[in-house]
Image (cartoon, rainbow, N blue to C red):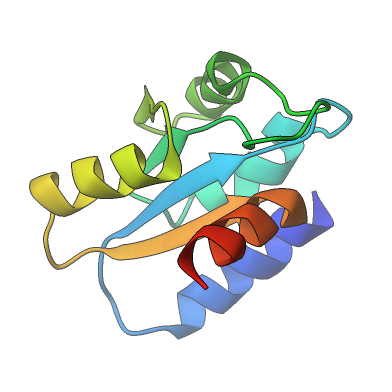
Length: 112
């Protein structure tokens, strides 16, 4: 939950603009606790599984936690699909890939 609070606090300092989240979490984390502070500053969330990570939380479970904190939510098959959906619906959006560092690592490996 502290990480979600820190991200939300940082987002509040940025220029006003819709922020959409792409989020993948590990099954061992408090997903709703992490997302609660972000629900106050984000426009939507695209839930993904972490590619290649055995301990990933299924995207559907991340989505359920997101819905439980009031975020408009969708499930995406991949980060690429999530990003395409966000850009199509809101081309000027800010996109934050968040959740697990394993997700960030996977995105960096794929996009060098």
